[in-house]
Image (cartoon, rainbow, N blue to C red; front, side):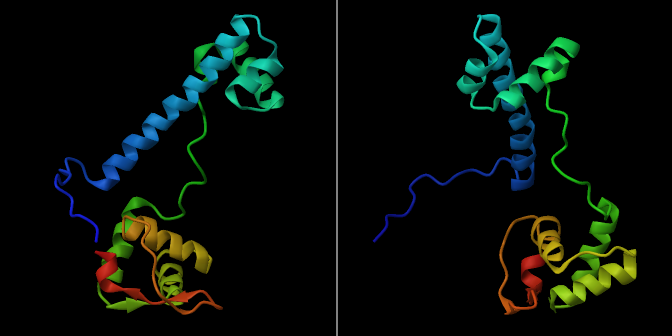
Length: 161
């Protein structure tokens, strides 16, 4: 039988804030990796050897070196934001959450129709599930599916809070 934890963790930050900080710091670790590549090039390593040292392909290495040569440090800072922006604004997501709170259980089809009717935005059933898991509930909790073959999932009201 497992022993209970003797020292519980104090929740100084909520999970959303921790995830934001992690995301910010990951940007720095990607930049650090690029700086190591540049350092190895300064030390006389070939592009291929320096690329192997940091675990990237030769073509990516040449891209980093080109950016370094053109823009210096600013050139090697990652430029991407991590995917396509949401079709729904934060305000619309908040409004959607309020609408979902008015009923105890939803299917992905019902939520899809609601979003289409209220916001004139169309999503696939898979994207609806992602929105509900990450945006509306604030976590990646899974739900029991009524009929997995058509992607319809019953969503418990308690999971939305």
